[in-house]
Image 1 (spheres, rainbow, N blue to C red):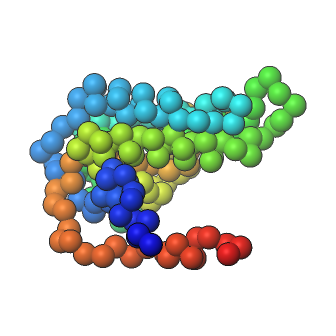
Image 2 (image 1 turned 180 degrees about the horizontal axis):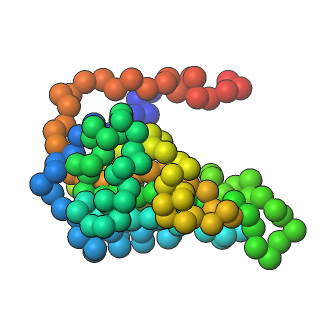
Length: 179
């Protein structure tokens, strides 16, 4: 029996989250647009598309507004990324009897995953993280109460690829209950 890892698409097999980005590489507006386009095509419950993003390219005024709200741990590496994206989901549902979308966070995750794979396809890497002051960033960008800032993603060219080492991942049997 072949190893399922060997059958993974190369974009997934080689995906990794860098700890440092190339601070010389800039992402242009067209780079941002293709990442957002990837998110736009993600599936969502009832085609609700309950996601939005605050986009901060390194060196722009939005980026400068994000940096003070990073936790010390992410402040060591995140500023070198060409792009920081605040991932926001719409928790309250319009035109519905529902007051709270139980799928919004899942759907946002799908959109961010699409962006991550698109970045990988374009020679970039992504690192998703939650090391920031959520309340301060919510206030900084006046995120309305029906929306919730969930996470951030850093995009850019990795500064260096780690040596070929086995990555620590849970086993397939650990993921597949009921066998």
